[in-house]
Length: 528
Image (cartoon, rainbow, N blue to C red):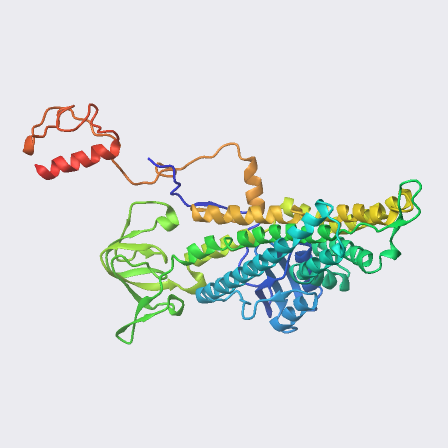
């Protein structure tokens, strides 16, 4: 048998999965798709900003999913106020992307499409910027590494570097400016300070070399030598960071696959009887107590109770059981399952976001957006990370400036300060844990394992024993021929024989493998 899991495993969170309902009268909840985040510090900035808005009761921002979930008093403020608050700190919300707890599957699908389109556009934009950065960085690096000297060499490097700074690196400087205006610190600030310092210093050396020229270290030379430029540092750093951002953007395009596959289990139409006429409508428009008709091979649109007819229904999407379940008068059917044989009618009992399928989708999304204890610890640590790096870089600059030779102190201090800033830029501390939860819960959902929270997933790492409840849990549930063994001589038509070694069958019933044995057996059966 195969090893593909077939059983749906529901892992309960000790804190519960939460729900779509709100606790207090007048309280509402909304999910906002956020754009422009580049690190975990961005998510903390948005979360802190939203919590500071009057009327907001709770807010959580997940960097891995790029979504903000806000619970607020609808009598005090509206969604447009939340969007304005996010945009005020330099980030954005997808137009028309906000959805509430009562959103339909169509709304969720629309949001998925908007997010997928935005991610694809972001990927293409980053790729264009990376192409420009690499194309212009290579000659700058070649000039610098080969120590080429010719009239106007610094001006050539400056001309090649300006497009990299102004176009390829523009997002870093905009993000750093927005963060600085609101007294925040993020990865953009590190990149902007490091590359900006290298670029400005090199520009001054190129335009006004006398300001930073230093005496030649060789004895007997009284003239001054021009200071070195570091254009290659600025261009190479931007190119390398863009590579990381591009890979991250590409990975994000796959994060919604689990949810999209679950949404794909719901059929496009539902056949409903109204006023004695059967009409076709989207499943989201099915109402309580509507009479729904299902034909062989169709997916059941919503949950309900059979009132007429009988059939066998494949409920493996819910239970993992591969054998169809017989349904008759009074039986319960689940939306998303497949009607195998027969036709029947049923009365809708749970529709819209009440259906079992949508509860599973909601649970998977909550699990992807949840924070494990280790993630909260990482958030606390990373909140001090950027300010600490900036402080260390400042100390590095001061120390090197004080201890270096007078003629080289500025350039040496600058280079070492930039090194401290840039080595900390690809900080995965705030991204690794939420991404692991996102991918883990998504892949689990695709395999039929539902995990209801990051805390539960973290605790699962301490499991010592796993108990499987029945046969078929870790098998495919589909029988297949593995061996063909001849137990006696049995002549058949066409001169063939089932005797071992006769008629093409090898001893043990094989012609070089199970596939050959099956084909030979079918051929012999057809010729008999």
